[in-house]
Picture 1 (tube, rainbow, N blue to C red):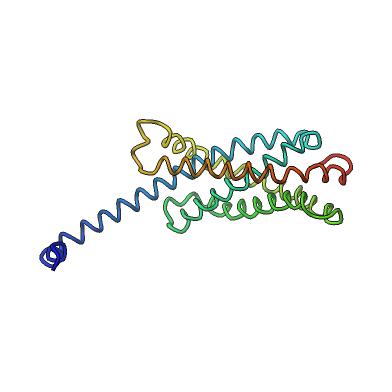
Picture 2: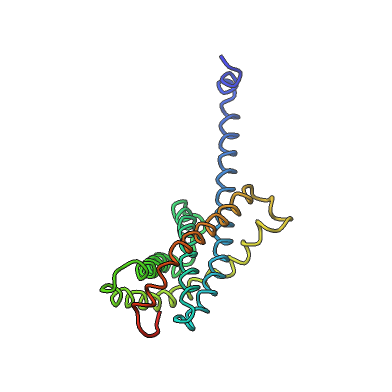
Length: 213
């Protein structure tokens, strides 16, 4: 019989609490790490969305950066959905009721907005009017829902986002480097996808007369 088996038999009341405490610490670290990942990624998304908002002001003239930034957003958005989905599954730190109800709406509208934008680059001319209407309508709804969403989480984001980057708080929760690399990888993937789809912008401009976006 192994020594650890012997200890487990003789001291069951000691072994189990220690194991439970280790599992609890790992769970707590996972919750804290996911919260930091979500917050840092939210800052990245806010910066990208602000840049995308600038292109909307003159979307016809700035269609190339509009498309590129929109595509770059896709992997970080998916990462955000994954981290918030993990939070929902673990059911820790539930936000206020309004934000809880608004979360799925924001997620659905974001998917529709990004999917219709990519679709505008890939579909034939006959589908452009319909997809353009979907893209514009989803943007209007998304902007209203996202404004409430951002304002509701802004304090939490700016409280948690710096913690993986400041020396005094970085080591409080393990996994800061992997979280940073994960966000960087999502941006690199988005940039690569953006460059791949930029070749379709010229065709879209040739087909679609006038302004709009």
